[in-house]
Amino acid sequence: MYHSFSVAETIKTAWNILKKNFVPLIVYSVLSLFINEVVDFFKTFFLIGDYVTKFIFIFIQLVIQCYIGLSFYKLILTLMDRQYYEFELKDILPSFKMTFNFVIIGLITGVFILILSLIYFFADRVLGISSIIEVVELLLILYISLRSIFCICFIVDDDSAPIESLKQSFEITKDNFFKTLGIFAIIISILVVTLIPLVAVISLFGLDEGKRDFIFRLASYCWVLLTFPFIQVIIMVTYRKLVYSHKDVDDDIAETN
Image 1 (cartoon, one colour):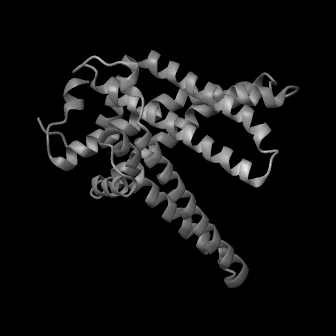
Image 2 (tube, rainbow, N blue to C red):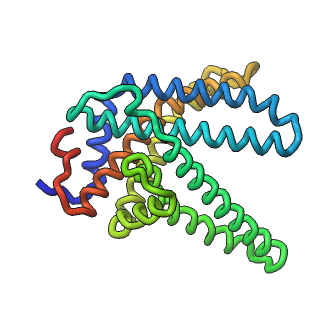
């Protein structure tokens, strides 16, 4: 049976997928954190060098983070579809082409942010209307982020090129912008709701005194492990449901979860 896109159904499906696959998602999240920490550790040594060395290491760090992000999305997709087939480790590892396409998306995002920063600088120093420009830029960033958020999903699922993936993301969100905005609001709520108890515990027991940096770093790890898997699952389920809705075909996710 065909299902139109529904925010409530999307969250329900994402929750069911998370419950069924909690252990592999948490394990992969821990591995991702560990790899990022190792990269950050080595970054301290490389950033002491010249600008060329810094740039090379930052680029390598970007590639590693893109690879980890893609592999997590690929894992979620595989777990969602695993009832249809068995999978191996190689099935959740992204190709070099996928990683390169994601890196290009990251570079495009960086250029976009740089252009907005230059416009803000010009508006502030020359025109003196920085407040208005700041509001306009924030709204523009929110709009473009919501319309393009699923480009990574298309890179993983369809092996799409960077520009193609952006066009596909804009296409499936064309008639569901406010519903996508609702999903985004729920994601923000999850981040806030899970953060409040951690901050409360730290303040209540005075854990922010003494080894403050260590406690806050530990709390940030807990926060990521509590939120990251669920949020990524929500994004991937939203992507799949938007694709089904856009193509006007049966919603396999809703039928099987």
